[in-house]
Image (cartoon, rainbow, N blue to C red; front, side, top):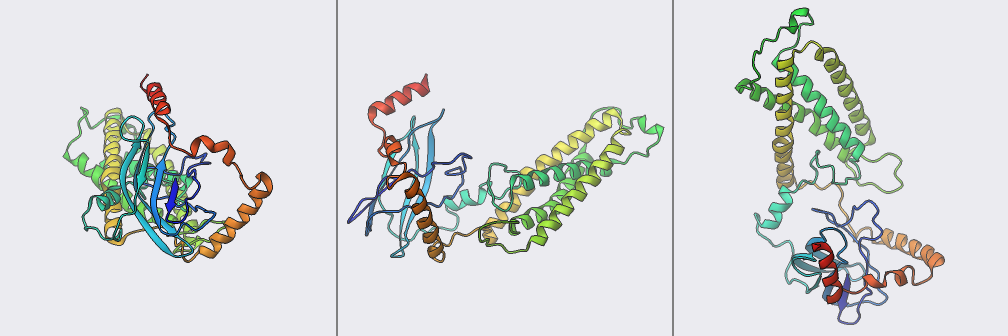
Length: 344
């Protein structure tokens, strides 16, 4: 990215390097970058954006860009809504600031619909990185959800009596009836109501032993309580299923497995999605708010410390001499060569 102002032009900046875990510029993401310029740009007139077309299917969709001047406290908004792609579209964009306030939009605009229907904060969306709801916590909630679902379905369709006659299957044929569908929906709803508070308590609780200031709503005791609840539910469900599974006959076990699959699918697609949409539409849940204006002093202190350290190790040019090929858009010959490589 390169910003062009009335008085000066910024140096090109590589936004997503280094990014070893591929967390920057992901789908439905909102990323924050601190760009330093040697001179003040004054009023920004253009914003040039391009990418290096690396990968099997190189493409990237940019929704919008907001540039905030931390010194003058002025803001420029770029309404992009374009896809930079090697096969379809263009590999570079030249943008001009959009007049008007970016908040002025219709209530049911397409952008808000995409925000509401996005999988962000969905408990089963493993690709979403959340600082206070890590992969370990998310996977533990999912495991507890599955085991609780299996246990509830077995309870609703009939517990074994732990006698030899349990081997006589009361279901002669494999068939899923209306009652089984009702059991799946009920089990899914009960499991969802138990685990959704645990997941959001995790999200609103702080990280233990963090070196950074955390803007959270709850104390760490809620995190400990959530872990106790999950461990207890996983232990009880596992013990219950281990004891009961031996006494469930073959056909009934197939129906049991089918009901569990329906229950889990319904919970993931319907209950979770409806809750996330309602939460975003009515309550506008935001786990972490980046208030750049209030934390400008802290940001400047950290940036200056990093700059002094990097200058002492690599010099004032840092790694810019190694990234010369990234600091300009691809030429027509390079685009043609990359396109032929992908197509063949």
